[in-house]
Image 1 (tube, rainbow, N blue to C red):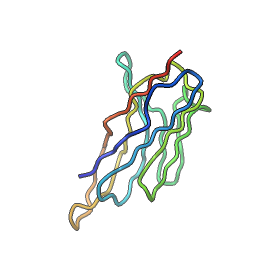
Image 2 (cartoon, rainbow, N blue to C red):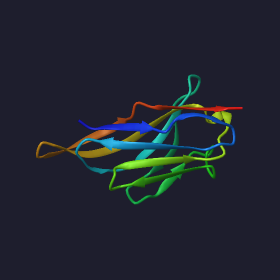
Image 3 (spheres, helix red, strand yellow):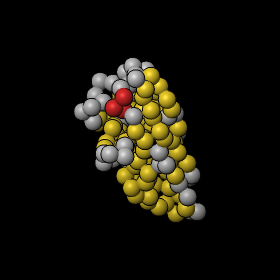
Image 4 (tube, helix red, strand yellow):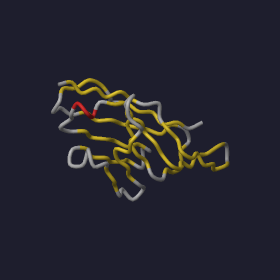
Length: 125
């Protein structure tokens, strides 16, 4: 009944930029922490950046100073601006939220640990 939908991935040359978006669809009431994770076939999924409802942010060490996470609470959407991309940023990027409140009929329900389907980011040399 609710889902996270990512967009904005693609192919970019090293040093270039991309902007990812993640929108929560459905009858969303509120969302707690939202974040971006990434994964490659040879690595575990890692946190890229997160942002809470007060727009307090946290970043993985490898992206600090290059990536910026932001959110639009009215649109239930987060963004990831990725600048100065490197080949090692190549991965599938997943949107995540720890707790999403949504309407199910007249009832408010929680959706815990919700993931998007992922979007591929490929950085070429």
